[in-house]
Length: 399
Ligand code: MG
Image (cartoon, helix red, strand yellow):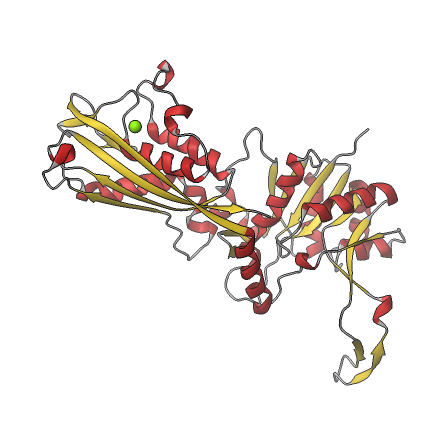
């Protein structure tokens, strides 16, 4: 019989010594801090080691767009539930445990973004063998005891007998629930409540990279590390469609009413959506939309290309973070300048869950759109067609 595991990411803290946003919501390497831990959970889930992930967020933020509008995991993705936490850390952990279904659970602090799947695997194995496990590290610095009131040094402390505790911490779920309910909300970590209840706990060698971000210095280190774990890829997309009478003109999913000519093609011939989709697919190293949605297939006749783009975005987001999309549309007629922002905003909407309130107060616009005339030369200049170029930047996590 294989045991089932749940993964709880605790991101419910209110305080931020870094100022502004609670730190677990701050963007690190293009995504909120908590998302790094969920990504590790996703890796474990892909390995078949995890049943689900539960993200515990500040109670008053659970219903804000930052969490409410996150894309729901589809089929073939890590099941992710978002629950509001409580005032105290213990209450938040209980809120997460309450909705878990696994026999076992890893409880992890979102302020530790660089969690390796290997550490999780070691903890899971140790817990299954011995009952419960936590990651610990030796203390490198010489330790001194001080008078808590005055700060005066009282004497040395033998560091040989001391260990620093990290997360995730691995427990059987129902016994942990009992222990935490009895302990009340005021516990430093689950290990403390577990030990206070007289239960055995197995140490597993921790990972220095799983450090907790607490102050501005930690954040600086995390930013450097995030850059190292990421690589950037660009993709280019190009498309052309003939301009003909009797067809609607649809650009970036926007129907331009009253346009005398429209773009011709098997789908709705939205040249902008096609170029953007190909740029994204190019960055992800995937085939172009012509192969994904073949024009030879009847079901794509008249297809809504914005919807196809949405599918492409979902596919590419599974591989990395879409950072930037720059588009140049070349068209002689009609005059498109007045419609440009409407088209741009419509495209931006396809990436919507990544912007706005996910990082409140920050401009998270990722689509840029320009239009050039054909200078009255060539096929564009003669109004025979529209041409669109796009480039997309994708950030890949190479942890
Ligand atoms: Mg096309």
